[in-house]
Image 1 (cartoon, rainbow, N blue to C red):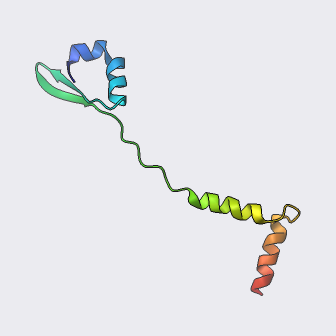
Image 2 (cartoon, one colour):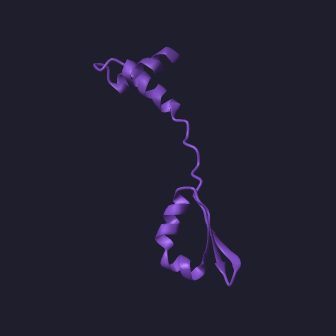
Image 3 (cartoon, helix red, strand yellow):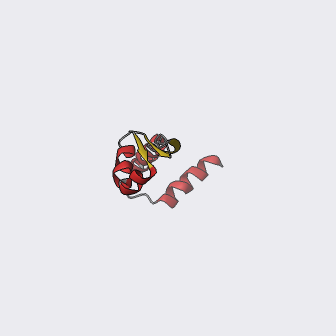
Length: 79
């Protein structure tokens, strides 16, 4: 969509909604393009699968065993 600066001042909220929906809005001053409203490209979601794995490993530790005891067991295996 192409809009004048005067029009964009009056309808900015509408143009922002349009840009958020994926439509580009070109703003002109005296017939020449000067600015553009476009949708924001968000970065892809990070891969958090390692958190799922950590959660699974934590759930495998018996609830009666405290973390410090589990760490002591691990350290004992190294000696």
